Length: 227
Image (cartoon, rainbow, N blue to C red; front, side, top):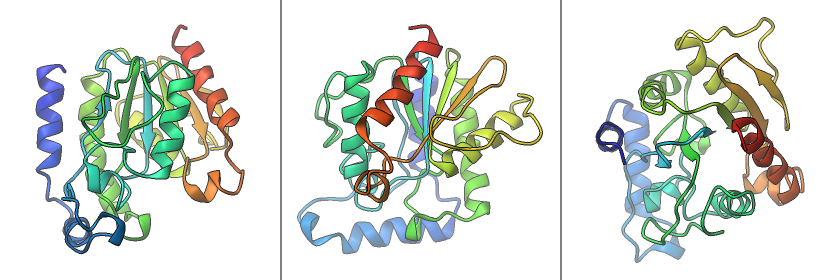
């Protein structure tokens, strides 16, 4: 990984800017879930993960309390991640269909996975202040990913966060603001925005988001990025 990107990820993991998030992530890591009681939880902000030369950026909401907050890698250790990485594998972005732990050999090509908020929030709902505080990390990150051409937003929160992030970088955002939806696509000049329902169990277990649906969005991202 590029030295500046690596340094950024290190600094992310040391952040204690949001007292409520710090208290919650550390409480979860101490109390644990019964199924993982013998595991040592990460319990810190979760760094981003992927290919530094990526043309496709995936933007999620925040780490899951017993997923990435446990393992220390984005979308790793929960069913949302299982669903996402299987799709990334089918569409050529990942070398394997599973992401169980940071040392499992998973590698991403032409794809970088980040989140609007880097700490697991209570009830999976960050506050507006927490979102805006954490967004500065993603803004700095995007400066170090010069090849990004497509931003895939995982859910409404990721979509809204990405629009705020791009607006802060001087990207003209049309009025009315682009509306989120699965398969939504907007050309913002140098960057194309794509939307997909979040691969949460609430969506995948009910059939609101199916493997072909997510595969379709990721395949479109690959196409827009240049094949």
